[in-house]
Image 1 (cartoon, rainbow, N blue to C red):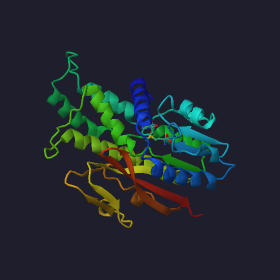
Image 2: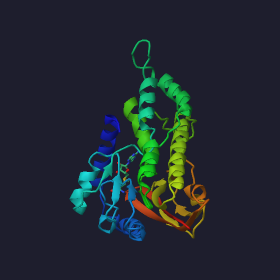
Image 3: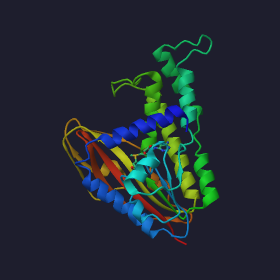
Image 4: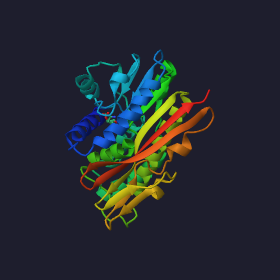
Length: 301
Ligand SMILES: C[S@@+](CC[C@H](N)C(=O)[O-])C[C@H]1O[C@@H](n2cnc3c(N)ncnc32)[C@H](O)[C@@H]1O
């Protein structure tokens, strides 16, 4: 993980932990229950992998089999976990998308004129970056290699997949020295579209590696982020999350945290079979609620 990115993830972790947790009780109970079931049903003699392990706020490490490895790009995540759970598990600090370094380098290239070394004019830099992004194909090679070497029986994805797009946006904003997006949501924004397409490719490649692992998969992720006040509830399960939301309020706006990728339609197939799925609302902060999704995919053989 290159320095600027690990710094960024460390900063985000601090911000995440510094938030007011008083309304998080229901979310924390639910996410710990799902991940705890995953850990308890894992073969205790085989390796287990926890992706997006973070500080362990959502991960009941006491239930983890002895050969469980944490994976998180935040360089402090293992220390936080040790302080919280009194356990020092093996850890991987790599980028799970495999594409963040190349993304960072491409943004830096786009904001500079290579011939003069001077910053490009903002609109020109945005256009240049929007033109370069479609050529980037994130490949989670480190994850694939780890899985190939260790053959885990169970993989937990602990609320990290919905972060890929948010982190990518953050990288763009950091290099541009502020948000380069047009504040008017009605205006076309080719850069935002190109970045969303990059995020979708990163999520799909990540899901492909998980599918090919042959492991039981326990995934929890942000499915959508809802901004604004007003009432928000969930109806009975609908594959399309937008149809499950019962929202009322003039200023409510929901954005897809997975850039249009539907993991539940992506994952099942071959010897994998989805056995459990659930959604709930997580009141993250005033005016910001997340639709969280849990998917459990277990091998049928
Ligand atoms: C919402 S937090 C998850 C919290 C965690 N499950 C816990 O129990 O504390 C998302 C985590 O994903 C990590 N992360 C985000 N993008 C990543 C990436 N591309 N590679 C590796 N880790 C990443 C962050 O450092 C952060 O710890």
